[in-house]
Length: 382
Ligand code: NDP
Ligand code: MG
Image (cartoon, rainbow, N blue to C red; front, side, top):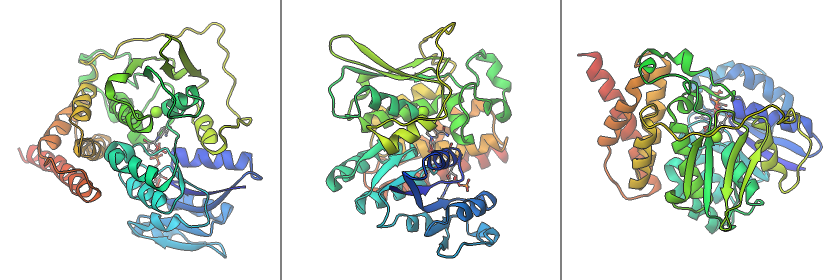
């Protein structure tokens, strides 16, 4: 029986983790759960899974948690999710969105707990600190993001295995068939219509701009200890190949399947074993697999992000923080789609190049967010 702390239970990934747990109740147990604001769903979840600890980060929503089961301790408040990381769990499943994942992962590592990592912001912001910390504590960081799970599978679950190149596939997002001029008028609603994956709102917008792919390049650099020049990104609109690894002899191994996060989620909990899943088997008959280069004109955030990755240090953290706020503004229809890159550039220009430390990540995260609103208010007031 694997005992799980599930952080972000109410989200897209979190709910799929619970589907996997429901499929194999004799193998998995949810011991603790954490969510952000969605009190209605969290209420149902805690009554179904009866965790020993339940936490809700939004204090204003805590009053809506009306029925706490006997035996469940309930915490709320900004940093409450840390309480869900307890000694008696075997693995911490980090499925929260955004920077809040970083501190949770750090805490889990320091408590010697293996981490199943869906939250990509952790490695984007703090990979340079998190990976050495995990090594020091002998803790595994298990990839959940589908591309990294694919690479890990191609490497036989051995992230240290020698390879020549990682080839990360990208769907191209909601606007893959739009021309550059058509992007001037697209809305948040349009951007939320992802062609192949059902995900949370923030990551869906990041797929449209391809910031998500840039984040995945950073994730891959840390998870597979590799420089950026050994990582290629290709647009593969069908989302059938989830990523590939090229070896020294020229062989390329790809992981394929119908797009479903339940496969990488389940595998993070069962590897090296594979159990049945409910994913529809892939029928390749009649299907075509296409590959294209990333069009930098259409996805200008991508080359911007690659430059930031090359700069390194605290800059990827600043980029991730700014992106969280910029995406929020776009979702609230306060800025246009084509403003996103400009806002990111502005925020990055306002960030100090501080030495890499957890303390400085915190500072840079705040600086970048503040800069986004600085520009927004400036433009709002003409
Ligand atoms: P969602 O927005 O659907 O869910 C986010 C979850 O995080 C919710 O449970 C939310 O709670 C919770 N949350 C947010 N902030 C806090 C906080 N401060 N404290 C506690 N809980 C918090 O996102 P996704 O599930 O789509 O994505 C989660 C992470 O996984 C992201 O980092 C994303 O990039 C990554 N990922 C997602 C994929 C996907 O297919 N969805 C694929 C690969 C990676 P609430 O809803 O209650 O506010
Ligand atoms: Mg992905």
